[in-house]
Image 1 (cartoon, rainbow, N blue to C red):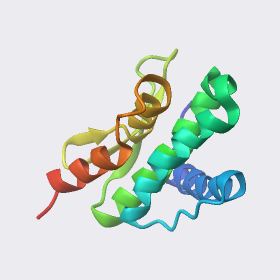
Image 2 (cartoon, one colour):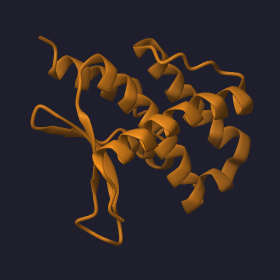
Image 3 (cartoon, one colour):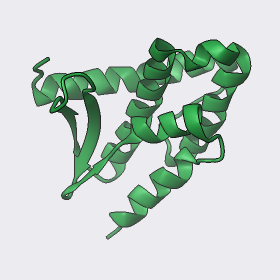
Length: 137
């Protein structure tokens, strides 16, 4: 899959918007694009597990949930600090999207995956805060 930077930016922006709509519809949680709202992503990810139990861990659901919230968090980071989305398809069997800024990449969907599938104690908000802190002027 080949995508221009503008197309990828548009896709991630739309996906972030879908995260807001889906979270409101599913759980009545309002994501407002503020840095503080990233803590609500931690809550929402666990709500998917509560509401949908085992089906939340099926491949398609995991992919969707992690990419929704990864895009949401990344868009907040991008607006606060900067950066651009990068689609990495170096492994065609496992392509992924990261946010690049100042020589670093941030796998926001990846940290959502860790919380959803591996360890509910992992904090998406802490990862986000550390990413912001790493780039504070």
